[in-house]
Length: 423
Image 1: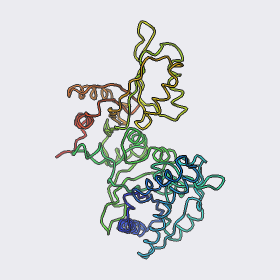
Image 2: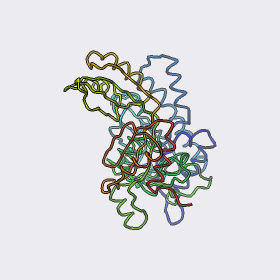
Image 3: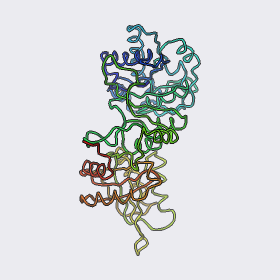
Image 4: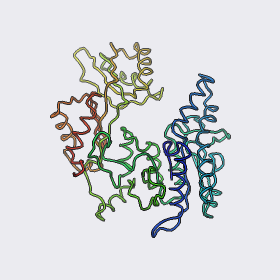
């Protein structure tokens, strides 16, 4: 079970979480008791507070010491949850990243989990003790504390689930499942019973905020079944086995759910939007071999992720315009880097626009169904929404539009693909 920062924000909410954990451990209905490991995030806002302390102490901080500071937020909540569970009559103890241990790479502040060796924790769980694990943290080969980067607790939870060979990894969040789109934009958005790993990966990568991309990729690799649930349920919460969240499963399990009549197969599973992109246009780039490499190699070296790329048809003078998108936060850095290399690249002007949005349509059904793209383009055209760029993958079509038209585009497409819930 994994609980995010909003679920752990203060002692009252931690008590609520403890009740949910106790109910799951005890089992309910025809479900027997479960062996439970719980992964927790820091209290909402706490990591930001700790990051600010680091910046005030030393603007050019050492990432290894930064990790020591920011990992303490999860250490506090893991201890508090263990104490609260004990007050409710449960046997519980915390297992810090270095105690299990969760071994990671040495890339401080953005480490990756390499292995989890937890025989002692597994043994204590088999004796009925609830294990409480701080998410987001691990230990490097040379014994230094490390952290996994933002959203890392989801990845910790999936990794722990894989290490203890859990039946399921329940991720409790402030939403009660994965929806066809953001319910705050479309009131008729529907909660999905199940989504495939592949679909969830695409949805997470194009703006759906429910799960962190890396955690879904790890679940897919390790075959960990994930269930997304809401932690904002009553004190006497029933066990998660009884709650209808959204399951994230393999293609095979999805096929079985469809066969058993528990799911309908839709061509499109969901619509995602992302306003955190910025557009860069380089005008009059020489239309010759190697010119595009000069643009994108320095961006790749600086770990700036480029998404949509359009190269216009070459002009008579052997020149072309190149348009691409980068994360909005990286725009100033990307712009400065390209200006530095103006001589190598040979472009005329840089034009930037951060008032754009990316709208994506995702669904495994696209593999075998023609017409998904034409429906998208026709629906947006009918409402006068201009498409500035397009990118596609096997199960996703993304378009770039003006930021002002985001909500309208999401509503129009949700209706066009028949995703609206019946009244």
